[in-house]
Length: 361
Image (cartoon, rainbow, N blue to C red; front, side, top):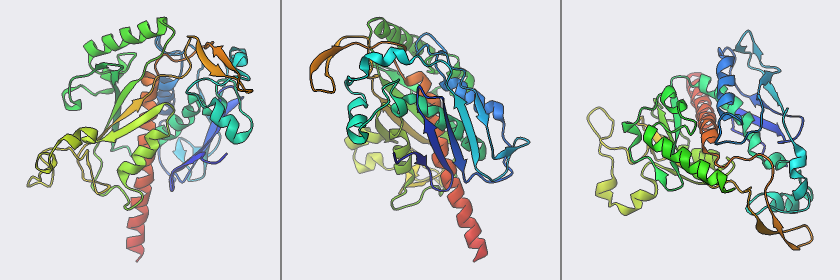
């Protein structure tokens, strides 16, 4: 299987399956001498782990990360950083009923047709459990680009949305983490939670949108032509399980405007009066806030009967069993932040290398 490595200069390679012995990865390209707060890495994992509230899957995993190499006395050594996270609460029997059956809108059929084999236990490699590795790498990337702040929050669940701009919200960590849905607007958060609980009781699932805001990104991050900043962010977000859409800045709304309405006019200090560009112009950061939205579909595995087919093409009925998220959004917030950090850390390395090359020449 190809496609298990993300990044160019700051790279992460991951391994493992949902119901295997463990998941893990190798972070390569991280400079030496970076002081790490390993408790902060575990904190990020805790934000992603299952069982943290009544509106997520009740799988009970501690998701404790063990570092194997590349760190000495809480500082990076410049060598590959190896890490592992052991699975402890996987109940593979919950998936025996889909051994020869394909779940609608899941990767079951495509994996089997491509590879001739699939791990039906929790989806194997296609499970969102793989994202634990991304969160570890992203937590380290955040500490590499520590002057840049990355904040994500749930901005809509189904037809319930925050009606305010991110600038009108309290986007402190405390404000977002206060709610199990990770929505910084208390009234909207309560409505979202009620909606998810109702959907869960019906044996169904629901999707929504996460908004991400990145502040203090210096001018000049991004590599045209084929490695534009927004293109790499889009690739990173679309690599996350259940993501169906990505838009930055004015996004699709911008198509309703004229050029005179959409243009971000410069001010004397070099900033722009508006920021419909979303902090990126020509694929390069312009120093303004970068903001984007990611659409997540409803989880494919539902506790309702649906028609499907088995390996022999027979039409049958299937009903989900086991422990599943009725909505992925609250646990996806740290994943979005981690993938954003990985993109920016890679560009940070590009800029560092470019400056070094300029001095050498």
